[in-house]
Every structure is written in C-alpha cells, then in structure tokens.
Image (cartoon, rainbow, N blue to C red; front, side):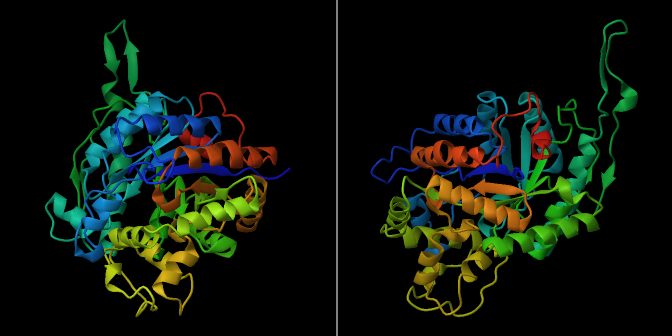
Length: 437
C-alpha cells in the first residue's frame, strides 16, 4: 500500500483568468469564483487553500506600474481575510490559510485576527507567515526600505514567539461558563505576557477566547538557508520550490534536520512542493495545452513582470536574447530568483523563461494524462520521502478549466492509487488533517 501524501492549493488572489478564449474572470470581485474553487478542492480532499498576498502595486519592471496594471500581475489584490471567512463558511473540512505580513500587522492584531477566524471556521484556519520582500510595500507602512533579510527573519522569530505567547495567555479551559456563580472565564487562567524584546513590546493578554486549535496552523515558504531555519522552527507546513525530485529530497532532508536542531519532531513539519501540472486526455493534447501558454504573446512579459515584482530587479533592462550578466542576488525573494537562474547557465533570458515553462513556481515538469502525471508525482514523492504537493496555476492565472483539470482529472487518478485522501476525518482541524498521515 503506497504512503498517502497531502495536497494544498495556492491562489494568488489576482483576477481569475480573463484573457483566454474561455476567460470570464476579472470581475466582479464578490468572492464567488473563489468560493466555487474552495468547494471543488474540498470535494477532492485537499488539506488547505492558501490566499497569497502582496501590499503594493509593483513598479520594478521597466520602472513603472504599467506592466503590472496592464497584465494584472500582482495587482489588484483585495484583503484576503474577509475572503478567508467567506471560503470557510462555505466549506466544512477544507483548511483556509491567509497571508499576513509581519511587517504590516502588529503581533497582537495577527493573534487576534487568527484566533477570531479560527473560531469562526471551527479550527480550520492557518496563518501564512511572510516578512514581505518589497521596498514598495515597506513604503506603504512608513519605511523608506525593508530591513535586510537577516534582520527581517530576526524580527519574525521574535514576532512568532510573541504571537504564540498571546495564544497561550488563555489556558485551554479558561472559559468555564459557570451559571451558578455567574463566572464566564476563570481569572486565574488568563494572564498578561509582559513581553519586552528587541523589536516588540506587548503586554497582553489576548482579548479573544481560545479557538478550536488554540494556535492556528502556521505555514511558511522559506527558501534561503535562513528562511529554511525559520520555517523548520515554526511552521506546521512549508511551501517549497525545488529542482526536480533530487532537489525535493535535498530540501526536505535539510528542513527535517533543521527541525530536529530546533527541538521539534520532524514528522510534524509537512513540506509541500509547488507544482503546476498540465493534464489532458492524451499526452499530445497536454503538451499542446502547455505550449499554448508558453507561445502566448504576453508570456515572456508576464513572467518577467512577475519575477521583477517579487525580486525588485528590473528584468526589462536585460537583453532577452543574451544570458543574464551575473549571478543575481536580491533583498527580495531570493528563492524565486534562484529558481529562475538554476534552469541552466549560458541560456538566454528568453530561453530561461521558456525552458522553465513558467516553472518559477514548479518543482517538477508535469505534462501528460492524469494517470501519467499521477505516476510521476508518486515516483518523485517516494524519492523525496514525503510529504505532499501544493498546486500552483499557469502564469499565476486561476481558471475554472484548471481547477476542473486538477479536481476532476488529476486527483481521482491519485485517489485510485491510494495516494491522497478520499474523505476527511469528521470534525478534524487543519493541524489534525496535516498530521493525519
């Protein structure tokens, strides 16, 4: 019997597909498209859906916001928390994970939001911990530029400890509801945290009751060595991008080692690798579908506008038909930049983008029938040792066609092999689902 692995899905929360021949997205922004998506993912047994977020209108590509606005790359983005509540209230088992930046929210507010939403969703909420990686975002919050990556993670380490302490400021059994004495909560089981650290000063206690998970699930996408250490120390689920199955194994082994060093059980840290599968009735049709994306006139521009936005490097300044001049580094998302550069030295920028097929967010090149792709996913997961995959979308454009391909085509092929869940344990929280296998 094969070992089961977990499935998650990431929504970039920009307009759903609106340019293709079947495109109908872009408006209205009432959340119904995402509710339909969440329901489909729940029918397919996914662990969670994650709502990605950014806090600025990008201007890195060409030095203006033109490309971002024309192609709707990284903008518009509405606040994901109200959407998370809507998704959760329209599902029963699916975990709902929201991105909240340690740069933008005081620790008390994140703890309060997370506790509130987790209570509303009966223990199915998760926090995607990000430090933000764009100077433009920092400038929306009173700063001229971001701190260095090392300082951002140092701040985040303390930030998470404060949030954990706030969750623990109420004991699990603090709410007694004793009608005979008229006591709602036992005062001896609620206490301030009196945190005074290098970066934060928070008195506490939290002013919300303990939620079903008490501490919602933590999700993180650390790619750099410092990011991996942070994720291994704190996250219940890690979003990872690797280079094929060999890179997947290396990443997972490294994170598990770091989890042990942080005093954690490595089996409690579920590493989910980003993939963007392309499936169709035949292998030929699948490649035609993928090639249709790559050959679209806007493909190169949209990919480079996207990578410019998250790295704050102007890729419009480079010659498309020449190799990148040097190994590039950034104070932004270095992991995404490394993923582009590792597709091969000596290739032109155009070749890097086309050969990766937008694989800036895909660990494996998965193209074929549902059974073929399921087989490749099984092989890679066995090689890596676990723990699962997180599905991303072509060109970061979500469409009903893509959701159906995954939930009605690929997932049934995985379920027939016994690789993914066919049903949920009734009443399970998100963290319980992540540790079910």
